[in-house]
Image 1 (cartoon, rainbow, N blue to C red):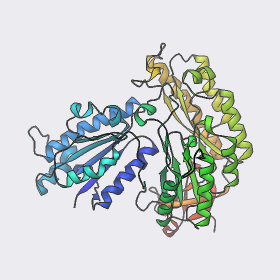
Image 2 (cartoon, one colour):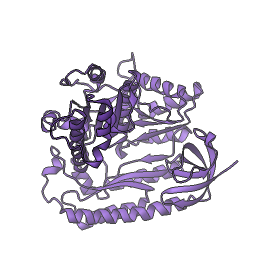
Image 3 (cartoon, helix red, strand yellow):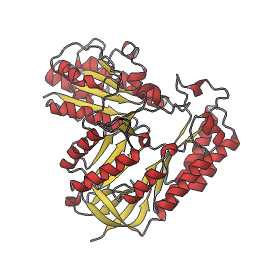
Image 4 (cartoon, rainbow, N blue to C red):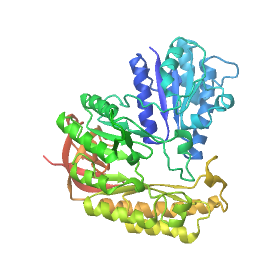
Amino acid sequence: MMKYFFETYGCEMNIAESAAVEQLFLSRGWQRSENPETANAVVINTCSVRGTAENRIFGRLGYYSGVKKIRHKENGAKTRLEEMQEAVRFVEKNGVVPFYVILMGCMAERLLDSVKKDFPVIDFAVGTFGKYKFGDIISAMEESRQPFEIPEEAVYTFPKISYEEESFSSFVPIMHGCNNFCTYCIVPYVRGREVSRPEEQIISEIDFLSGRGVKEITLLGQNVNAYKSPVSGKDNEYVDFPDLLKHICIHLEKTNSPIRWIRFESSNPNDFSDKLIQVIKEQPRICNGFHIAAQHGNTEILRRMNRKNTREEFLDLVKKLRKELPGVQLVTDLMTGFPGETEEQFNDILSLMEEVKFESAFMYYYNPREGTPAATFPDQIDLKIKKERLQKIINLQLKHTTEVMEKRIGETITVLADIVSRDDERELLGKTEQNERVAFKADKNLIGSFVKVRLTALNGNTFKGELVQ
């Protein structure tokens, strides 16, 4: 029995793409390995958004170089290192068994021409547009053939299924790439231009997930609410994102699907239209929590980032959402330390946070990415200053998160129970409509069910609750 192991870094799209490739392995009779040292193949799905993510992967490639030397009984193998003992025991028991390392994702795309030369441990480097060759890669490994180069297709191919076995939640990619070219962002260069998946393919995957008992789906795209796909068989007619959401909701209702909740991310504020808000308001299956990236609170910085909205336009959108969708919760992305950011401009981030009171945020300082315009901008900010500013943002957001969540204590809400708590086997963990975590005492047979829970306390960023009979 051949075994695989996945390491996935970065965004939800990477998680979905790993799940799609895993389905190929499973369909060929492979089995998931409990650890990488005893697998036949390790797949590293990479992220290039920040240099820290790439540096971590470089470290992992160094580690797997050591594992491969042991697995192949090469000269210089460091068999006495403690972290290598699992691989040593495997070889003692099974002898030499081919060990393959596959690099995929954004980092593989960015470094496609050089990464195998720089890291000989890599057998296959699979860029963004080369994933269609995974069937051939698996065949080569099964037959112990030599690695081969992966040709790139000109157009991104969506996987048919991105389902994780036995999961009650699933990602559904609906679009890929980005046309915005924010000056700090490498995504358009490694993911390519926006491509929207045909509606019939999306509905087909959702039907598959319904048949597997999935209870919630998250529609994914680097710029998800810019979705726009031609209507099959009709010239100059398109389905936009609000249309797609509405069609999915109607289809789920008609088919009596167990999928009760629909989420989507990540949203660009520039594409969060009045039409989209109206569809959300009309369709109860669409969850009332949204990830909308603000990035900054100063209009001049936003302009130099090549963001398409001003501070005032972002705040107007927030006001509109809270007026039309009572109880809505907002998550965002915030960046400090962009080239030329003054202390006054930095303070505009803090004032935006005070005005909006986001429930949570993904916070980071600007990290230059080679090949993006901002990497060559003058007035790069000193790392010490960037770290100090980031810490101020983190401290303020922690305060806001506690304030926003504490206001909800006492509410009775619907929760999707999905796993047993690691801290207490008598408790289940569930998700709220706003994607918060709730721990509550309940029988394990409720896993996979929607239940009513009264929120009683807050423990860090997790609610404590009581099951309402």
